Length: 463
Image (tube, rainbow, N blue to C red):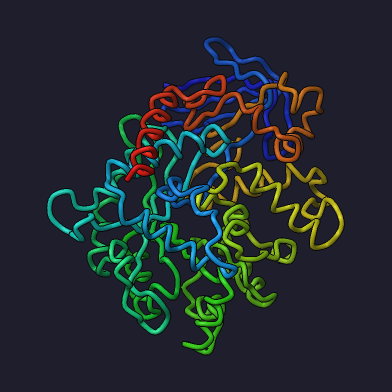
């Protein structure tokens, strides 16, 4: 059975189009699109302006419980490396039920902000007592998946291999022990879950994989695991942190004689299934190499700024036809419009001019940013979404035409208003697989989730 939607205005790959009729299958996939016509009954109207939902290509859900909680100065040398102490403290107190509460709250917030799918880069594996086997094994994985199903967001679950604390095979520190899995254990667990594509409620699920970083996975281990992952699923998305911090680059050069991106590209493993997260400290040659490989880069501007990582050279990568997507990472900001706004603003500040990332083909900066990030983010997650088109999942957001942030704007300026004029507040509806998970700006479970989450945070604060 199919369902028809009448869209007043829709941002199609060809541009803004009026009176669009989209037919969606029971699996949530768009099977036909007709423009300039009225749909025969029965149909469901979506008033206002409809855009493709955004993919959040990099998330650590548990860190939502830390957002805003590590902003007190401890010394004049506070950095990413000192922030990790607070992150480890949180990671080492969370039980599966608590993680599910945090992740559910976060995923609802993502949907309200316009994210319709998320890549969960997940490295909490072991129970609090250190067990990696027996009853409740991988309960922390189950908690994230259950949270995504409860919220209704599309999920690419990316179990993350994490084995060493630094280059040269340095053993994990005690505070990192929950992250460790043997390679065979890790691969077997992924293989066991590959069959689950979606649950009975229809929340889209994709199983992928991640390597935490080159400092956390020795190169020989990475090669072995990557080969096995390709055998398990040759289309599997594979993600890795790389070159986030200057100190990481220096340590890699000291241990191997090569910079981390240079080292990774030299393996010959990187292709269009891979997503390299951050790449903050990339040389022009490395950026060209990433673009040539077909891999995506995921930037998380709010987190990279919060942690003092540095600037990604977005314009150079774009000029190399690089694939770029965004993520919320540490959850200091859960807002794709803000990530994209500051992606552009960083470049304006560096180059002292405006409209840096707009193109001759798409002069509206907002449209260029939103459409490219939605398309490439979904591709990086292995999700069939990212555009309002036949063969894509009906993951859409609808803007209220009467909201002050966008009222009176021409259709072609809608994404500009969304990103540069506080338009997030105009997001009225959000659909995932053709099902409204946000209606009139609200999620059916948000009040209960907020109450449960607030109680958990008060309990954490009192402990």
